[in-house]
Amino acid sequence: MVFSEKSVAVVVASIVVAHQHNDRPFTSLFLSVSSVPLCWVWTLEFEMCGSWRLDKQHINTYRTDGLLKAPFRIPDDQLGRMRESLDKLLRDNSHLAPETLVCPHIPYGKTHDETAAAQWLEYARHPGILELVSQLIGEDIILWGSQVFCKPPVTGKAIPWHQDGQYWPIRPIATCSVWIALDDALPENGCMRYIPGSHANGSIYTHRINERDDVVLNQEVEPSQFDESSGRDDALKAGEFSLHDVYLIHGSNANHSSNRRAGFVIRYMPATSVFERAAGDEHVQSGITFSMSRRPIWLLRGMDRSGRNDFSIGHGKHYALMPRVSDEEGAESE
View 1 (cartoon, rainbow, N blue to C red):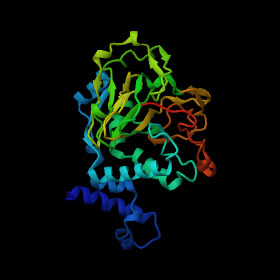
View 2: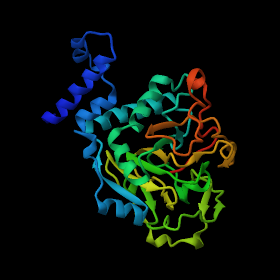
View 3: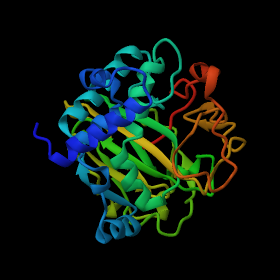
View 4: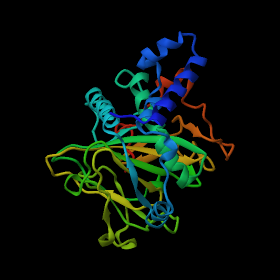
């Protein structure tokens, strides 16, 4: 890999900062890669994260269609680390359905401890992705959720047409979801599909219960409320990612191919909204009751403009003991 002088200068400056907050000899910081946080390694790989900027056409596409395929991608070495994290997550949680591995950035016990969760949290804090999100929802950004969607070959289940805001405890409803393809996500293995412009009126459509056992989610938008023939594929090669609005109608077909389809989805909300824990106290999904009332959230950028978000719940000495929202307690959706 060849690095520009600007990239090297950024990392050297970062290491100098580390030295200023570290009692270890300055030279040892250069010799020990482990002393450099992953986000600084990303700075080297991605040049200056400020270069991850959207132009007016990109922003207009997001506003008009409700989804934007990012004009950037995750570099191969970073993608490799994410896939290693995925392999470990699947291996350590083989008792859970691979389509519904919720919040891997939160530790929940022996099968997913603080070290494993910290890797996923760092992925969610990626400075380039945050730069893009800030151009869509504002500079004040809260991380409130994430999920791994892993559709196994042949048996991967479908997700009906739905809107995310139907059951999320955010008031007012606002979230930008970043869908990172860890495998190729193509029509043949069940990539996400969406109805362009379905977010435009900023409202929740009527949903009905879907009792089929071959779908991950049991809620779907009433078919009479949208034109399914206008649906588009959010086809992504491994390392590519898209960003979509909370009101967008979307879903995905089953994976009948011989190829796995895995993605990591990160949920960011503007800090002008509130994660209403009372509203997230109980949800029924797929016939299972679960709670978001004790889920930890992170202020990643800026300030809490609402003044009402609680960033202490789920953190501190009880952090590792937080109940994990998995398919044991309920599943989220793409």
